[in-house]
Length: 400
Image 1 (tube, helix red, strand yellow):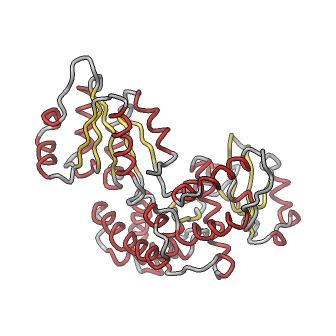
Image 2 (cartoon, rainbow, N blue to C red; image 1 turned 90 degrees about the vertical axis):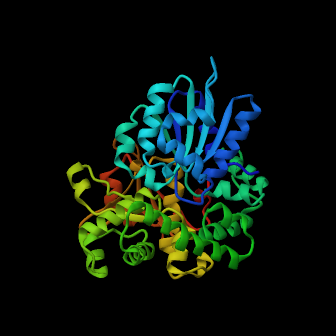
Image 3 (tube, rainbow, N blue to C red; image 1 turned 45 degrees about the vertical axis):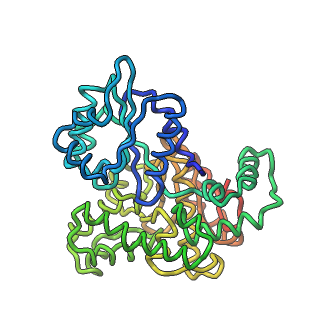
């Protein structure tokens, strides 16, 4: 079975006292990873238990008293037990459950749990579990994982050679771009990647859009499903653009407060990311509009019902920019990635601040002919510590 890159990082945390929490959007393989980790530790001789809270008898027992856990998973003298809990948000009060067990039994018990947005969105989660948990956020597959899931480990090896600079040219370059075009159209949900038939890929994406996001709405307490979906579709069509709450409010006839609440839910459900502007003046930075990106391009494309080879798309510039955001977000923290724009219209797509007021900038163009340094004199002069790079379609920087 194919494994996610995050798995090794999570395995290293098992020796730590804190409980381990896996979060991320639905249908990205959290439950599968949890089962793989469970099997790995069992093979190493650890005392492990796996609980699925879909079972009502187990759920009722744990809701009645967290210590009922030990009826199912008995403690062992002089040895720590490891309990894997899938979908921990089904508990009536998951935060209190984890807090009590950590405070009373953390020397004898390690919990590894998956949780959906309903669990993570609860403000008590961070307040009550400070110092008691380590969160690992998962996303849909990145391009390297996509190739693994496609069974193209030979191309992954080739990518690693290119990344290490041991190789500067690939004999498989055309194949890379064909796979990347598929990835950009249908995204990185594992089930979608593993499906070869295009119509079936689209049907799976529809199910994610219509069924799994709906669960997010129910668990997050969103009242008006229709308006929520209309706003999400609007954001998908405008990914890469600046987010104007007043404009969305007027377009969809919603209050600003409702728009802000829906944006909060979409971020906590890991469907969108808001990128803030970069300025030397922090107060300006915090008051200017962010740009919005959809975290999976397959989801973006099903929301606007548009699938086509990138070179033939009317929105190819926005799609490519959204993809470049994904590439950067896999290598850098979210708060390190910003954009630059002035009142007179000068703009750079991405500013990556790797240390205070130092880093690099990326401008995304569809082809090399559009990449002209002369258009960016103001930025280059103002921010010499952020050398400007150009990324365009079929430039290897996109994937290495």
